[in-house]
Image (cartoon, rainbow, N blue to C red):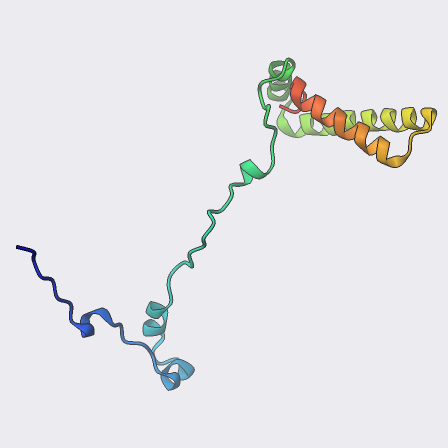
Length: 125
């Protein structure tokens, strides 16, 4: 009861170009057909949104305020102001570290903690 399906070898094989025809460029279409259109990779490609970004976007206490401010003054101007605020805050941390005698690794750690806290509070929404 099983249906037998037969394939002829000629129907499965594509005409592959020879060395002489591929060097001279005579049989470009056959060469293009013999190469897959897109190479397959084992791993799926990551989206840029997953590589960078705030995992707490829109969840912090100050996130609504940040979003409203960004919509009012515009994204470009908002990012400029945000950059200035982050730079000033980093300078304050640096001065604090100089005052207490902390080394550069401790300063980097404090700046990293400030960034994580900013994300959690919604300042980086």
